[in-house]
Length: 590
Image (cartoon, rainbow, N blue to C red; front, side, top):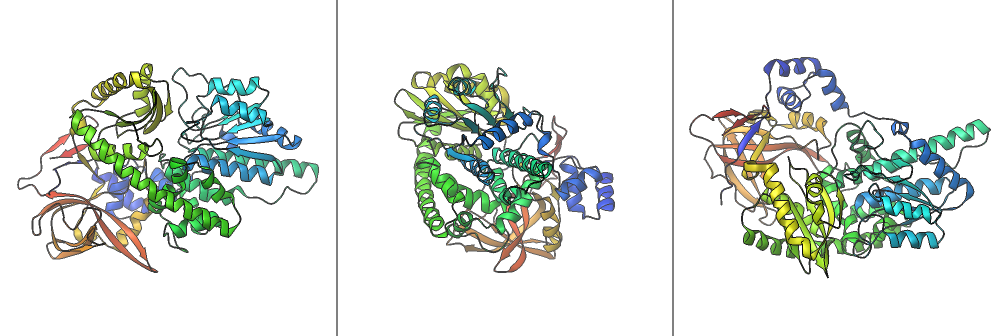
């Protein structure tokens, strides 16, 4: 079956700016086009982006000194410090970073990871009371609590000190917890898009810098040798898994972190790469993290408890690491089966509701740990924002995913009167809703989506970064485009448009799940592959097509070669393409 026709959206690209970049940076025309279309026409900004070396000191967090003083006081006193994390990859990794740093400082430190089913997201009043009863005197939150004003106050009332580190959006009313806060947006950090693990990493850097300065001033030996950079592998893993924008310092952290992950000394991460079939030794890609490592680390927290993932990272026992990695691999397999069942049921709900700008779907036996993944699949498939709710008794826990040009957290703010609680950010969010308000919430969410998206919601567009010829699609360009990596949110993979080419010589691969084929235009040809669509292609052999591709360097058994991957294709228009200018100033080809 042929794919539906899409509009190719091509941002303006003045030729003089392309030529200026080619001369200033000695790059090819296609790379210069990509840079210009991504707002990097200035040679200095383009060079800085390609270098990916932006880095800021921890002291750039306004008020971080208050957090340092509180932590250092409890380290020196030997009182119990509890790091309270979250059950996803970012929450697990940020907990691990601070626990490792505090252990190396000699702190009396333990941790608490909430259970998704019984505790829910973030600080829970019952958890706060339990921690106080068992002797916690300093509670350090990671990846949560920026909205937990009442819970933090409860901890203070029970005699604990609290330090809040987080990256989620604060409450709509602007009220913040009455505690020292380390948060990239709240504290005016130069890179506001850090994930929680990157925030924890910056706090660990600050703690160790302060410890070294004190030792030097006192003329005593420095504390046990520890380098926070050893945890850059965790920072890269969490930054990619949490789908934060790969701009500014995040690019630096992920690029360095992927190199660290390739040579990690952590037995748990090595074991995880083994069960996930991520080649060792060798480079680790963003795709390997996002589709192989992160889902397995997430699996325990989605179906059971996240403690297994944290133990995997912290253990120094190779045999134990292998055992846990195998458990996570099995949990991930179970997660996939559960996901497919919920996805099938959710699609039936979508069909019953008909065309909407946004959807709220609910199920009695849906697993709260899996609905977020399903919401993501549905949003990608239908190009609509989705919220899925797992009902249990008189209430339900929901997880939502947005789409481009739609602020999911803003939508929950608009519908907040129907919700018990909610939190998150623009692209993803969690919530709790009573059964009796579920229908009202669904209607309000759909109405808000209609207001925001309007007629644009049904339009399928294909982004184009550069228009190229078939003879340009070789190793030289693939290696040059790799300078734009790491790819992800805020820095998507490069989309190259080839116009009027034909497909030929298709051959199934991967047990019929994928297909190889030849792309031809005039005397030139290139080998390409299409993943996940079975043995068919969107256009028939010999039919001129307009098609977009990614071009990457593929490493396989020590051999590097260019790999051309199909993104979208449709029969080329017989008549010359019509060009229109959108409200954003982009060019749209019909």
